[in-house]
Length: 329
Image (cartoon, rainbow, N blue to C red):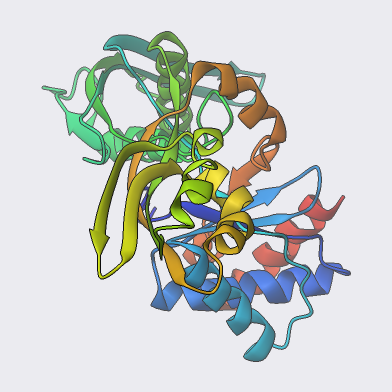
Protein backbone atom coordinates (compact mmCIF):
# COMPACT_ATOMS: atom_id res chain seq x y z
CA UNK A 1 0.00 0.00 0.00
CA UNK A 2 1.55 3.31 -1.04
CA UNK A 3 2.11 5.97 1.66
CA UNK A 4 -0.91 8.23 2.14
CA UNK A 5 -0.35 11.98 2.34
CA UNK A 6 -2.79 13.51 4.86
CA UNK A 7 -1.05 16.86 5.36
CA UNK A 8 -1.21 18.61 2.00
CA UNK A 9 -4.90 18.21 1.04
CA UNK A 10 -7.15 20.73 2.81
CA UNK A 11 -10.06 21.15 0.40
CA UNK A 12 -12.43 18.78 -1.36
CA UNK A 13 -14.44 18.92 -4.52
CA UNK A 14 -17.40 16.61 -5.10
CA UNK A 15 -18.21 15.12 -8.50
CA UNK A 16 -21.80 14.01 -8.94
CA UNK A 17 -22.74 10.50 -10.01
CA UNK A 18 -21.58 9.74 -13.57
CA UNK A 19 -24.30 8.92 -16.09
CA UNK A 20 -23.13 5.34 -16.69
CA UNK A 21 -20.88 2.68 -15.18
CA UNK A 22 -18.55 3.11 -18.13
CA UNK A 23 -18.26 6.84 -17.36
CA UNK A 24 -17.30 5.97 -13.76
CA UNK A 25 -14.69 3.54 -15.01
CA UNK A 26 -13.23 6.12 -17.39
CA UNK A 27 -13.15 8.72 -14.61
CA UNK A 28 -11.36 6.43 -12.14
CA UNK A 29 -8.78 5.46 -14.74
CA UNK A 30 -8.27 9.14 -15.56
CA UNK A 31 -7.85 9.99 -11.87
CA UNK A 32 -5.38 7.15 -11.57
CA UNK A 33 -3.37 8.60 -14.45
CA UNK A 34 -3.38 11.99 -12.71
CA UNK A 35 -2.31 10.38 -9.43
CA UNK A 36 0.69 8.76 -11.10
CA UNK A 37 1.99 12.29 -11.74
CA UNK A 38 0.60 14.06 -8.65
CA UNK A 39 0.52 12.26 -5.28
CA UNK A 40 -0.96 15.22 -3.38
CA UNK A 41 -4.60 14.30 -3.77
CA UNK A 42 -6.84 11.55 -2.46
CA UNK A 43 -10.05 10.02 -3.81
CA UNK A 44 -13.08 8.90 -1.81
CA UNK A 45 -16.20 7.21 -3.19
CA UNK A 46 -19.59 7.73 -1.55
CA UNK A 47 -21.50 4.45 -1.89
CA UNK A 48 -24.86 6.04 -1.01
CA UNK A 49 -24.84 9.06 -3.32
CA UNK A 50 -22.43 7.48 -5.86
CA UNK A 51 -20.44 10.70 -5.74
CA UNK A 52 -16.67 10.94 -6.10
CA UNK A 53 -14.81 13.18 -3.65
CA UNK A 54 -11.37 14.49 -4.54
CA UNK A 55 -9.29 15.98 -1.72
CA UNK A 56 -6.53 18.32 -2.86
CA UNK A 57 -4.17 21.13 -1.96
CA UNK A 58 -6.49 24.10 -2.42
CA UNK A 59 -9.09 25.31 -4.88
CA UNK A 60 -6.67 25.93 -7.74
CA UNK A 61 -5.22 22.42 -7.39
CA UNK A 62 -8.68 20.84 -7.44
CA UNK A 63 -9.83 22.86 -10.44
CA UNK A 64 -6.71 21.82 -12.36
CA UNK A 65 -7.59 18.15 -11.78
CA UNK A 66 -11.21 18.71 -12.86
CA UNK A 67 -10.12 20.68 -15.93
CA UNK A 68 -7.81 17.86 -16.93
CA UNK A 69 -10.60 15.29 -16.60
CA UNK A 70 -12.70 17.40 -18.94
CA UNK A 71 -10.15 18.57 -21.51
CA UNK A 72 -7.67 15.69 -21.70
CA UNK A 73 -9.93 12.74 -20.94
CA UNK A 74 -13.12 14.21 -22.47
CA UNK A 75 -15.31 13.44 -19.46
CA UNK A 76 -18.64 15.20 -18.96
CA UNK A 77 -18.61 15.82 -15.21
CA UNK A 78 -20.88 17.75 -12.85
CA UNK A 79 -18.87 19.34 -10.03
CA UNK A 80 -20.11 20.94 -6.80
CA UNK A 81 -18.55 23.95 -5.05
CA UNK A 82 -15.25 23.24 -3.21
CA UNK A 83 -15.48 22.72 0.55
CA UNK A 84 -13.16 22.42 3.53
CA UNK A 85 -11.54 19.04 4.18
CA UNK A 86 -11.98 18.20 7.85
CA UNK A 87 -9.67 15.77 9.63
CA UNK A 88 -9.59 13.90 12.93
CA UNK A 89 -7.01 13.42 15.66
CA UNK A 90 -6.86 12.32 19.30
CA UNK A 91 -6.23 14.06 22.62
CA UNK A 92 -5.38 11.14 24.92
CA UNK A 93 -2.89 8.25 24.99
CA UNK A 94 -4.65 4.87 25.05
CA UNK A 95 -3.95 1.21 24.46
CA UNK A 96 -6.21 -0.81 22.20
CA UNK A 97 -6.68 -4.41 21.11
CA UNK A 98 -7.52 -5.67 17.65
CA UNK A 99 -8.64 -9.29 17.39
CA UNK A 100 -9.93 -10.98 14.26
CA UNK A 101 -11.00 -14.62 14.60
CA UNK A 102 -13.22 -16.45 12.12
CA UNK A 103 -13.99 -20.15 12.16
CA UNK A 104 -16.01 -22.29 9.79
CA UNK A 105 -16.04 -25.91 8.76
CA UNK A 106 -13.46 -25.34 6.04
CA UNK A 107 -11.70 -22.09 6.90
CA UNK A 108 -10.14 -20.52 9.99
CA UNK A 109 -8.60 -17.07 10.31
CA UNK A 110 -6.66 -15.55 13.21
CA UNK A 111 -5.04 -12.14 13.71
CA UNK A 112 -4.39 -10.36 17.03
CA UNK A 113 -2.48 -7.25 18.06
CA UNK A 114 -2.17 -4.62 20.80
CA UNK A 115 -1.27 -1.02 19.93
CA UNK A 116 -0.72 2.24 21.79
CA UNK A 117 -2.07 5.49 20.33
CA UNK A 118 -0.48 8.81 21.27
CA UNK A 119 -1.38 12.35 20.13
CA UNK A 120 1.39 14.20 18.30
CA UNK A 121 2.02 17.90 17.73
CA UNK A 122 -0.15 19.45 15.05
CA UNK A 123 1.02 18.97 11.47
CA UNK A 124 3.76 16.47 12.37
CA UNK A 125 2.06 13.58 10.57
CA UNK A 126 1.28 10.02 11.54
CA UNK A 127 3.93 7.61 12.81
CA UNK A 128 4.11 3.82 13.16
CA UNK A 129 6.58 2.12 15.52
CA UNK A 130 7.10 -1.63 15.74
CA UNK A 131 8.09 -2.67 19.27
CA UNK A 132 7.48 -6.39 18.80
CA UNK A 133 10.46 -8.44 19.97
CA UNK A 134 10.58 -12.11 19.11
CA UNK A 135 8.78 -14.24 16.56
CA UNK A 136 6.68 -15.90 19.26
CA UNK A 137 4.54 -12.74 19.70
CA UNK A 138 3.73 -11.77 16.10
CA UNK A 139 5.94 -13.23 13.36
CA UNK A 140 7.81 -10.53 11.44
CA UNK A 141 6.06 -11.49 8.20
CA UNK A 142 2.75 -10.18 9.62
CA UNK A 143 4.02 -6.81 10.93
CA UNK A 144 3.61 -5.04 7.53
CA UNK A 145 0.02 -6.31 7.38
CA UNK A 146 -0.78 -4.79 10.79
CA UNK A 147 0.76 -1.52 9.61
CA UNK A 148 -1.26 -1.63 6.38
CA UNK A 149 -4.49 -2.21 8.29
CA UNK A 150 -3.74 0.77 10.54
CA UNK A 151 -2.95 2.96 7.53
CA UNK A 152 -6.18 1.96 5.87
CA UNK A 153 -8.21 2.71 9.00
CA UNK A 154 -6.59 6.15 9.22
CA UNK A 155 -8.17 7.16 5.91
CA UNK A 156 -11.61 7.26 7.58
CA UNK A 157 -11.87 8.27 11.24
CA UNK A 158 -14.54 7.50 13.84
CA UNK A 159 -16.34 10.87 14.09
CA UNK A 160 -17.16 12.01 10.58
CA UNK A 161 -15.22 9.51 8.47
CA UNK A 162 -12.51 12.15 8.02
CA UNK A 163 -8.79 11.32 7.55
CA UNK A 164 -6.82 10.78 10.79
CA UNK A 165 -3.70 12.90 11.35
CA UNK A 166 -0.98 13.50 13.93
CA UNK A 167 -1.20 10.16 15.71
CA UNK A 168 1.69 7.92 16.80
CA UNK A 169 0.84 4.21 16.77
CA UNK A 170 3.11 1.72 18.54
CA UNK A 171 2.63 -2.01 18.00
CA UNK A 172 3.80 -3.66 21.22
CA UNK A 173 2.02 -7.00 21.68
CA UNK A 174 -0.23 -9.62 20.13
CA UNK A 175 -0.37 -13.30 19.33
CA UNK A 176 -0.62 -15.69 16.40
CA UNK A 177 -1.90 -19.12 15.47
CA UNK A 178 0.50 -21.52 13.82
CA UNK A 179 -2.01 -22.64 11.17
CA UNK A 180 -4.79 -20.04 11.04
CA UNK A 181 -2.87 -16.74 10.95
CA UNK A 182 -2.57 -14.95 7.60
CA UNK A 183 -1.81 -11.51 6.15
CA UNK A 184 -5.47 -10.57 5.71
CA UNK A 185 -6.30 -11.39 9.34
CA UNK A 186 -3.58 -9.08 10.64
CA UNK A 187 -4.67 -6.27 8.30
CA UNK A 188 -8.16 -6.52 9.78
CA UNK A 189 -6.80 -6.78 13.34
CA UNK A 190 -4.70 -3.64 12.84
CA UNK A 191 -7.69 -1.76 11.46
CA UNK A 192 -9.92 -2.84 14.36
CA UNK A 193 -7.27 -1.85 16.91
CA UNK A 194 -6.97 1.65 15.42
CA UNK A 195 -10.75 2.18 15.29
CA UNK A 196 -11.25 0.90 18.84
CA UNK A 197 -8.44 3.07 20.16
CA UNK A 198 -9.64 6.22 18.40
CA UNK A 199 -13.03 5.96 20.11
CA UNK A 200 -11.36 5.90 23.54
CA UNK A 201 -8.76 8.60 22.89
CA UNK A 202 -11.02 11.69 22.98
CA UNK A 203 -11.17 12.20 19.20
CA UNK A 204 -11.61 15.73 17.87
CA UNK A 205 -12.43 17.19 14.46
CA UNK A 206 -9.89 19.56 12.92
CA UNK A 207 -10.57 22.21 10.29
CA UNK A 208 -8.29 24.19 7.96
CA UNK A 209 -7.59 27.76 9.05
CA UNK A 210 -6.74 30.23 6.30
CA UNK A 211 -4.53 33.29 6.63
CA UNK A 212 -6.69 36.02 5.12
CA UNK A 213 -5.28 39.36 3.94
CA UNK A 214 -7.60 42.22 2.99
CA UNK A 215 -6.30 45.44 1.46
CA UNK A 216 -8.95 48.18 1.37
CA UNK A 217 -9.40 51.91 1.41
CA UNK A 218 -9.47 53.17 4.98
CA UNK A 219 -13.04 54.39 4.53
CA UNK A 220 -14.20 50.87 3.54
CA UNK A 221 -12.35 48.95 6.25
CA UNK A 222 -15.01 49.33 9.00
CA UNK A 223 -17.60 47.62 6.75
CA UNK A 224 -15.15 44.79 6.08
CA UNK A 225 -14.31 44.30 9.74
CA UNK A 226 -18.00 44.05 10.64
CA UNK A 227 -18.13 40.79 8.68
CA UNK A 228 -15.36 39.18 10.69
CA UNK A 229 -17.23 38.10 13.87
CA UNK A 230 -19.45 35.88 11.76
CA UNK A 231 -16.33 34.33 10.25
CA UNK A 232 -14.70 33.52 13.61
CA UNK A 233 -11.69 35.65 12.77
CA UNK A 234 -8.70 35.41 15.11
CA UNK A 235 -5.19 36.90 15.40
CA UNK A 236 -6.38 40.09 13.72
CA UNK A 237 -3.88 42.81 12.80
CA UNK A 238 -4.25 46.12 10.95
CA UNK A 239 -1.58 48.30 9.39
CA UNK A 240 -1.73 51.34 7.13
CA UNK A 241 0.28 51.91 3.97
CA UNK A 242 -0.08 54.65 1.34
CA UNK A 243 -3.64 55.51 2.33
CA UNK A 244 -4.73 51.86 2.33
CA UNK A 245 -5.45 49.63 5.32
CA UNK A 246 -4.10 46.09 5.31
CA UNK A 247 -6.02 43.78 7.58
CA UNK A 248 -4.93 40.20 8.32
CA UNK A 249 -6.67 37.46 10.29
CA UNK A 250 -6.86 33.69 10.66
CA UNK A 251 -10.27 32.53 9.42
CA UNK A 252 -11.80 29.01 9.21
CA UNK A 253 -12.09 27.91 5.59
CA UNK A 254 -15.70 26.79 6.13
CA UNK A 255 -16.65 30.40 6.89
CA UNK A 256 -14.41 32.02 4.30
CA UNK A 257 -16.07 30.12 1.43
CA UNK A 258 -19.41 31.67 2.42
CA UNK A 259 -18.15 35.26 2.56
CA UNK A 260 -15.81 35.63 -0.41
CA UNK A 261 -18.36 37.50 -2.54
CA UNK A 262 -19.45 39.64 0.42
CA UNK A 263 -15.87 40.65 1.16
CA UNK A 264 -15.25 41.57 -2.47
CA UNK A 265 -18.41 43.73 -2.45
CA UNK A 266 -17.43 45.49 0.78
CA UNK A 267 -13.92 46.23 -0.52
CA UNK A 268 -15.28 47.77 -3.70
CA UNK A 269 -13.07 48.58 -6.66
CA UNK A 270 -10.17 49.74 -4.48
CA UNK A 271 -8.31 46.89 -2.82
CA UNK A 272 -8.19 43.13 -2.90
CA UNK A 273 -8.29 40.07 -0.67
CA UNK A 274 -6.28 36.84 -0.70
CA UNK A 275 -6.09 33.72 1.44
CA UNK A 276 -3.46 31.04 1.87
CA UNK A 277 -3.59 27.85 3.91
CA UNK A 278 -2.31 28.30 7.44
CA UNK A 279 -2.85 25.34 9.76
CA UNK A 280 -5.41 22.91 11.21
CA UNK A 281 -7.19 23.60 14.48
CA UNK A 282 -10.01 22.02 16.48
CA UNK A 283 -13.54 23.03 15.47
CA UNK A 284 -15.76 24.66 18.11
CA UNK A 285 -17.65 21.99 20.04
CA UNK A 286 -21.03 23.47 19.12
CA UNK A 287 -20.20 23.06 15.40
CA UNK A 288 -19.19 19.38 15.53
CA UNK A 289 -22.59 17.76 14.94
CA UNK A 290 -23.47 20.17 12.12
CA UNK A 291 -20.19 19.48 10.35
CA UNK A 292 -20.68 15.72 10.62
CA UNK A 293 -24.30 15.93 9.43
CA UNK A 294 -23.49 18.09 6.40
CA UNK A 295 -20.33 16.24 5.39
CA UNK A 296 -20.04 14.39 2.09
CA UNK A 297 -17.78 11.91 3.89
CA UNK A 298 -20.51 10.25 5.96
CA UNK A 299 -20.84 7.29 3.58
CA UNK A 300 -17.54 7.71 1.75
CA UNK A 301 -14.51 5.42 1.72
CA UNK A 302 -10.99 6.05 0.52
CA UNK A 303 -10.14 4.34 -2.73
CA UNK A 304 -6.54 3.39 -3.44
CA UNK A 305 -6.31 4.19 -7.16
CA UNK A 306 -3.41 1.75 -7.56
CA UNK A 307 -5.17 -1.21 -5.94
CA UNK A 308 -6.10 -3.02 -9.14
CA UNK A 309 -2.50 -2.86 -10.44
CA UNK A 310 -1.42 -5.42 -7.83
CA UNK A 311 -2.72 -8.11 -10.18
CA UNK A 312 -0.76 -6.74 -13.14
CA UNK A 313 -1.92 -4.87 -16.22
CA UNK A 314 -3.47 -7.93 -17.87
CA UNK A 315 -5.92 -8.46 -14.99
CA UNK A 316 -6.48 -4.83 -13.97
CA UNK A 317 -9.48 -4.49 -16.30
CA UNK A 318 -11.19 -7.53 -14.76
CA UNK A 319 -10.80 -6.38 -11.16
CA UNK A 320 -11.74 -2.78 -11.97
CA UNK A 321 -14.93 -3.92 -13.70
CA UNK A 322 -15.84 -6.11 -10.72
CA UNK A 323 -15.34 -3.19 -8.34
CA UNK A 324 -17.44 -0.78 -10.42
CA UNK A 325 -20.31 -3.28 -10.79
CA UNK A 326 -20.36 -3.80 -7.02
CA UNK A 327 -20.17 -0.06 -6.30
CA UNK A 328 -22.91 0.83 -8.81
CA UNK A 329 -25.55 -1.49 -7.30
